[in-house]
Image 1 (cartoon, rainbow, N blue to C red):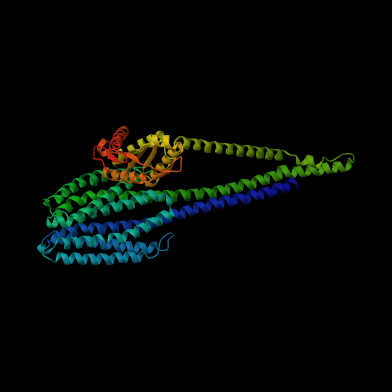
Image 2 (image 1 turned 90 degrees about the vertical axis):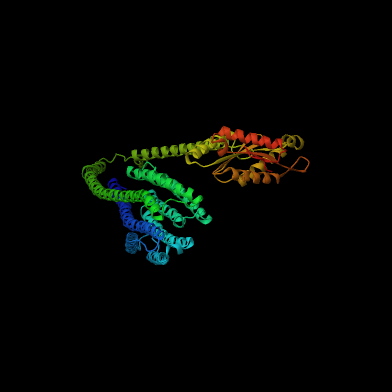
Amino acid sequence: MQLHRMLQLLGAVVLVATMALVGRMATTEWQAVSSASESLRLLEPLRAGLVAMEMVSRERGPTNAALGDAMPMTQERSDALQQARLRTDRALVALRDAVAGAAGSPGMPVGLPTRVEAARVALAQARTVVDQTLTLPGARRSAERIRSAVYAMVSVVPLLAPINTALAGGAQHAYPTLGDEVQGALLAADLREYAGLLGSHFTAAIVKREPFSVAERRAIDETRGRIAQLRFLIELRVRGDAMPSSVIHAWEMVDARYFGAAQALLQSVLREGDADGRYGLTAADFAARYVPDMNPVLELRDALLLQARESAMREHDRAVRVLLWALLGAAVLLAALGSALFVLQRRVLRPLVRATGALHALAGEERSAQAPPQSVARQDEVTAVLGAVRLLQQQTHRRHELERERDQLIEQLREQSATDYLTGLRNRRSFIAAAHDRLLQAQRYGFDVAMVLLDIDWFKQLNDSHGHAAGDRALQAVAQVLRTELRETDLAARFGGEEFVVMLTHCNPQAALQFALRLREAISEIEVMGAEGHYIRVTASLGVSDSRTVGLALEALLAAADTAMYSAKNAGRDQVVQSHLASAE
């Protein structure tokens, strides 16, 4: 093929490739613009859903206060209740309209307007229960009747939660980068709801001035546990480097007011409710002091939603700018490519064709001239460069293969250095390093830790009488029992010889003792084959220590567990002894 034909073909290929690349880039950025726009469109219904859930939750405040009043209800209390109901109704209507507008968006489930209507019907029914209770004189309002009215209102919010989850999922589906902000806003809304629910648990007891019932105390503890979980999950999201100072400040206000002042109030009421029920305040007084300290939670929710909106706006603006620059760059590139082809055609190829014609004419006149061989013509600089590149690629590929093999070997050696070769458990060094990390986490988050140290009984006699193979089988069988009994968050290791160690996280002393007893029983069921074909029963002595007793120092936990283990051995073996507690078989 002639050189000028090759250049024309190359120009056409470059032109098509450039157009394809620019088209791909433009398509990607257009999708980014559309996704950001869609996420912005869905953030508004999500905000409407969170506000609706907030209004339903807020309505419980004046409702609970009214339930605590004797008949007739004061005009001020009646006006507050009616205003709260009007706010809730407006919020639900706004949510219904917003959900209808979001219908058909990618990732959005059908039937959301029906769910909103179901929540409105449930709210109307709950209000009927409340109004029926309010018509009764104060003396006839039993604690059970008040609880029924309170929890009728409580039951409305769970009907709104799936709507908000679906709206959040749609926003994240459109723009996945909003995950932390959107999920953080949902968690903040849940925290506000559970905080309100916790206050509702107190209403009946405060109104009737009675101690908490068993059911109320259990509900309070469960709700406080959920609030603690939400606090942990929210803090994980808002403490990241990507969060702005406004979000961090909002979280600090939540930490100071709700988890500070409000919790102090709750503790005071809890003490009275667990004692004689003399609270020293009415349901309205409790709501007036407790509810304002929940407001920073809503400010945190709004700050996260605002951050999500700003992130989506930034992505939208960025994608628009990149799209415009891509189109402009494509135009400039096409112009430059056309200019280069024109210059090459005019200043290189055309003179070359003329020179070739002149050489042919000269060759026609000069009959003795010989044309160069074809093989010489094919050996040009481009071929040499391509050959060098191929060689470089082969060498680079080989180097990458060697690096990958080296990394695999390093990883294998690292794993072997941390694992006991016989049992497959961690070795002593690996366990100590991991245990220090877990204890630092326990200090930070305030959970309990327990240590179980066990030693196989009569292991030396087992080795001497039945051979080291039987001893190895005993060690492997005990290791398998440990793997079966442990949770994913626990640590287990062969500590040396016939000793094994287990660290239990999120485990109180009683649970640690029960675990050790189950472990001792499971080990006592092990039978290994000896040298002469006889089966030998394996038992172990176990010592248990816990952080409540000896603290969170690793050496203290190990020392206490070791002392308890030797107490078990001295008491006859095949036993469990808990540090500073009585032994248990």
